[in-house]
Amino acid sequence: MSMAQHAEPAVTTPPAPGRKETDGRTSRRSPALRVLARPEVGVFLGAVAVFVFFLVTAPPVRDGSSMANVLYQSSTIGIMALPVALLMIGGEFDLSAGVAVIASALTASMLSYQLTMNVWVGVVVALIVSLGIGAFNGWMLVRTGLPSFLVTLGTFLILQGVNLAVTKLVTGNVATDDISDMDGFGQARKVFASSFDVGGVQVKITVVWWLVFAAIATWVLLRTKYGNWIFAVGGNKESARAVGVPVTFTKISLFMLVGFGAWFVGMHQLFTFNTVQSGEGVGQELIYIAAAVIGGCLLTGGYGSAIGPVFGAFMFGMVQQGIVYAGWNPDWFKAFLGVMLLGAVLINLWVQRTATRR
Image 1 (cartoon, rainbow, N blue to C red):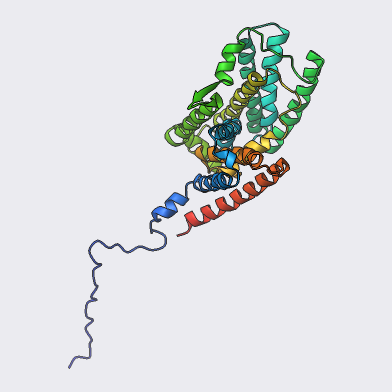
Image 2 (image 1 turned 180 degrees about the vertical axis):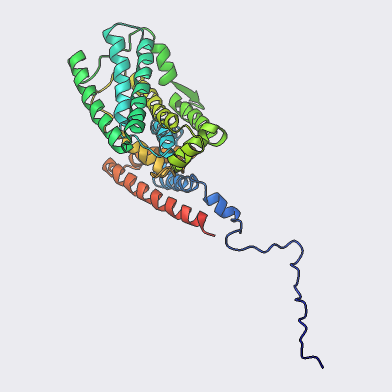
């Protein structure tokens, strides 16, 4: 009898038909996790919760005119929150956005009134000035390598001083003169500050512009090469530059988009109130940034959407008007905003961790 032992061939059981073996690295996320991965999901749920809360606690909110006021307040924040959100996705933020709105309105008002020109001349010059402010911020950022916090903080202080000093120098007052009787005012008012009737309720044109800009921003982010560049430079600008992304152009153009938003909101304020207070705008930049953060954008860049800030701005408008309709002390408004901001940051953190968990 031979002492050699013959090994039998290993017998393997084939996997059941239609079943694939996976491990933690290759398993696909469930549809629920894929939905949670969207940056606007958390703020959408929050907006629904805030809306239902005030719908119950503040009965006047149920009126159509009240909702029109809520949408109006939301739109004046949301129009600026959109370019601010795109800039944050690109890895930067702008502390001069609030005073830039006033600078734009002051430019259009004083140029038109003091030189007795058609107001459209002032509107066009104000657009050039606003885009120039944005271009300056972007150029300083890429040229010096300084953080956007420092660059735009400097611009914020410069504009704050210039707004007040130049207005006093030119008009002798802290506010501009009334331009409502000047040529072109009626046409400009229709574009920037008119209202239209919907079922007997007056709705401001800014609500339409807000939604149009949100649709354009969403298309740009999700369907264009420029949108890919924004996410790339926000994620890692050196890696983006290595694969051919024009980082300098993208950064500067994003700041110019913020300038465009500041111009549009500034024109709305000018043609709504016919005059501009030079000391306004301070603190508004934090509202715009907070709306973007609540909307799912990260301060670290590379993550966010254009739809999220729409819901974030709606939450701001809902709280701001809802407190009034509920008959509460309006001093609580900022406290509500602080709670909303912290809650949104925690929700975004949880969503990210849940969405990336295998």
